[in-house]
Image 1 (cartoon, helix red, strand yellow):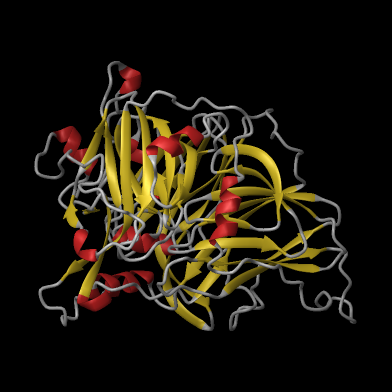
Image 2: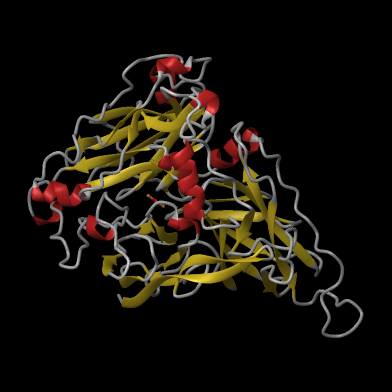
Length: 547
Ligand code: C2O
């Protein structure tokens, strides 16, 4: 195994998109940031140097960080932020994981521009369980604002309303040629006719699920997150923020130029970016346009993508994903958790206040079991925990909702006013956990991609309406469910996951739609230390930032 040393200088640079330049927080001047390529078993040592004017932290999305919460990154959870002018070194080893992961800032809305791919190849000499592709291409789907995303966030937090939607969707940082001033920079992927390539697709967007497709080409899904999957062929994938999907594509069509495109899959009534981002798959043998050296002939062919609200296609796609092999799912459950996930509104005493610009003079809040998570400020949860500092958090997070109601029916908002708290739920080391995430219809039904830090879970079932334990549990897939770190709760439905809590530390669980996270759609697990060295948290690094 190798050790990879990197320096990540986080600093603002002028970046031009959509005819305008504005100062953008980047890593080493790159947007998107550098791609990390490592093998299973390798160690990464990344010195993060903060030269921006914001506090920042970095998160290695999907890396389990066994016994090592110190390298996980969510601000005020496992570390205090790295302040401007300071640095912190993240050290971690990839243990029995391979696939497509990514890294991103985990500090307010900085991840809008501070992100990159983290590709984990199999150990030296161990092959993929599919034919070796000729080349591999990371595809990062993102969002771009015409201004500093931190200002977008500030405005939303101040008014209590929804944040401004992005001005463009992007592929590898470029909006593509359907947007103004973007056609020259449209990302092009040259291919030889007949070759098979692996697309490592990452949804790094802030607030949007996406449909993605390549015109006239079939995609064979071979992996999601760090799972290899039973291969299946599809013309479109749905991918939620935080998720990754590996697909094989064979260049077996007439030599020409084909668009790959992504647009939002969005079920909410809320405003969203309904534009489309493109890149071009360009056969090297595609005919030229008249003169030599000029661009390839004629406009690229466009893929057919499902409508923005095509929940049926989105859910059918996700349901086809199965682990390649049989897996070990816990069959006995020690902790049976039922978590409502959804948006809520907090009433204001003065509904005309500029701080109450949510629906009908309210402020947006989002919650799990009606607790809207508040990130502490005085210390990180992990530091407070090991120092025994009281008053930072409590451990009485409710395992079930405080009241039972028709979650997806016509519910009155008054029933469900979230309370803002910093509550953790304690899990004994080694306990076998089931969580059912239940979407609610309090404000709007939407997909909530739930992401767990420090663990991966098996996705054993999902459905529409209210979860019914007596009939739905019997249909769970305990044979070959995919192991993932992020899974969408279907709009107006539920999803069930199982995992063993075998990583001591404090681990955030949250919706990977950043507007929802900002409104509090999060909680954290405290996985207690067990006995013996392999069950206890490593000591904190000496350069761990202080608050
Ligand atoms: Cu990719 Cu807590 O995040």
